[in-house]
Amino acid sequence: MVRPVDHPALPSPKIGVLLVNLGTPDAPTIPAVRRYLAEFLSDRRVVELPPILWQPILRGVVLTTRPRRSAHAYSQIWGERGSPLATITADQAEALASAFGPDAIVDYAMRYGARSIGERLDAMKAAGCERILIAPMYPQYSGATTASVNDAAFAALAAMRWQPAIRTLPPWHDDPAFIDALKASIQGQIAKLDFVPDTLVASFHGMPLSTLMKGDPYHCQCQKTARLLGEALDRDIIVSFQSRLGRAQWLEPPTDMTLAALGAEGRKVAVVMPGFIADNLETLEEIALRGRETFIDAGGKDFAALTCLNADADGVALLRHLIARELEGWVAPA
Ligand SMILES: C=CC1=C(C)c2cc3[nH]c(cc4nc(cc5[nH]c(cc1n2)c(C)c5CCC(=O)O)C(CCC(=O)O)=C4C)c(C)c3C=C
Ligand SMILES: [Fe+2]
Ligand SMILES: [Fe+2]
Image (cartoon, rainbow, N blue to C red; front, side):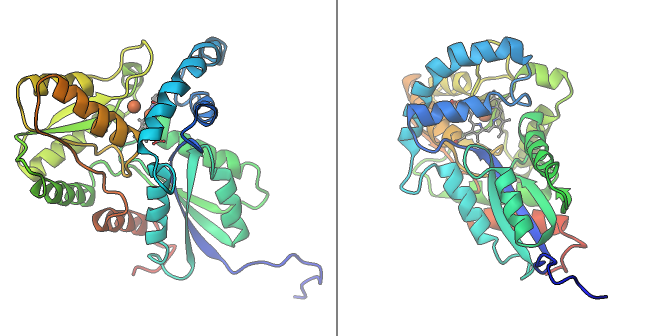
């Protein structure tokens, strides 16, 4: 068959892997944080109130008060390369660049703010990706996180004439490889502390209690991660939920009250945050800085906030394992 001379050039077929995390402001400033929060908190997967009720509260109250406090929080954790969440996600993608063979492209995107999912999917398509794995970087599934990432990916696809084939990475909250990676990371970090923790707290990002009642599996998946981790480490783990926002009832118990009570009891505490695969504002500011303060103010002395798996060897090996399994049939096993 003869190809018309003006037929558009076609790149050779590739596989794409798109790591997607939450997103972060462009800068630790009030205007940048306001822009970020306006997009984030307008997502109906995140705040499920009808927009006619929520938007006046968001515009009139939340976006006039919260950005100042949040910008200050971000300024305390901002690094030379920017927001830790963005930097670590970039490092994870970089570390995986050649993990799935010469025909696979590994990239990353953010659900909110810069480096959007649509922009990166367009870039992958232009580079010849005919099959793409969307990999939301959340161990536990929730409508507000995993589903929101997948919605945004499929919305971007809706604008494409020639869509790539798509797979999405399932949650891995109970995957033995995740539990093993957490166990190794926690044991390694605890061995380097200058005290021996007698109490291990697993703090997860909170969600409104109503999401559990409506069938969101997030709460159960957090509990299961903590139970399996406790079994693997052969020790009790106290589960708590951080970052309550607004007046509605959230998942309980709250991490700040848990840490205050443990401080008052004189416990030696290590906090792990197995709901995040990369350190971010919630781990570095809310727990490592403010959580420590709460604990010390209540009378506690020994406190450690352990880091997430990040782009450390254990973290990269885990992501490689999870992604390789999902690419089965698309790329030959390594
Ligand atoms: C790990 C999963 C997360 C869930 C579940 C989640 C739910 C959720 N979050 C908010 C509101 C805010 N979250 C904020 C920051 C933030 N949230 C997550 C992850 C989850 N959120 C991360 C990783 C981060 C940090 C991002 C970074 O740049 O480092 C913020 C912004 C900061 C602040 O002002 O406190 C808000 C707001 C809701 C309402 C919600 C569930 C419905
Ligand atoms: Fe959040
Ligand atoms: Fe928070």
